[in-house]
Image 1: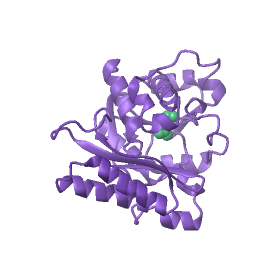
Image 2: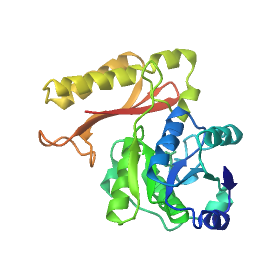
Image 3: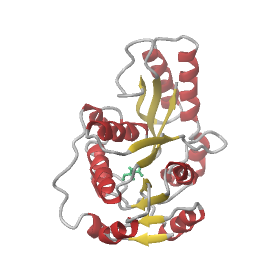
Length: 274
Ligand code: PAF
C-alpha cells in the first residue's frame, strides 16, 4: 500500500491507475470500515482510503482533541484489506489556509443530528467535496451507520452533478447488536453492557411499523421513555423517510428509524431501515 500525505503526490500516484474507488475515514478503523474497503474492490480498479480527522465537522465542545488517532494500526488493517493507496494528509496539507469556501447543505443539515451538532454537516460536506476533488473517484463508499451523512453526501453529489456513485455500506454490529463505532471505546464496561438497548428499541419500532402501526410518534415516545428510564439522555428517536429524512407522509416511501442518545459522556447513534 502506498501512503501519501501531500495532494500533489497523491495526484501523480493516481495518474493512469484506472477506475478509482474511494473510502474516506477519520481513522481508528474497525470492522465496519474494513467491510467498506472490501466492498470497494467491486467498484473499481484502485481502492483509495483516506484518514483525516476533520476539525471542521467538530463543534467547540466535541471530542476533536481526544478523537482516537491510531495511525500505525490503521495502516496495518488497510494493507491487510488490500487497499492500494492511503491518503493521510496533515491539517497543513489539507487546510494550508483557513477553509473559507464551504459547502452549505440545505435544510437536511439542521434536523436530527444537525439540530444537536450545528455546523457538523457543513464540515462533513466541505471536506468530502474537497477530498473528492483531490482523489477524483468514480465511486465512493460511506457506512449506513451515519445515515444522515450518507444522505447529505448522496444529495450533494446528485445536485452538484458529481460524476461519482455514492454507495452505502451496511452497518457492521457486535454480536449483541451494538453498531461498531470509533466512539464505542469511550464506554465503561457497564455502559457497554447497556448500549445494545438502542438497537433493540429501533428493531421494536421497525417491527411495529411493519406490523401496520402508523402512529410513529407513539413509537418514538415509547422508545424515549424506555431510554430515559434506563438512564440515557436522548437527543432524538425518529421515524423518517429514507431519501430526505423528512417525517413520514404516505404509505409508499421507504422509512428509516434513527436515534441518537448519550450513555454517560458517550453519544451513540444508530438507525435501521424499515
Ligand atoms: O464518517 C466519517 O468518518 C467522516 O465524517 C468523513 C466522511 C470521513 C468526513 O470527515
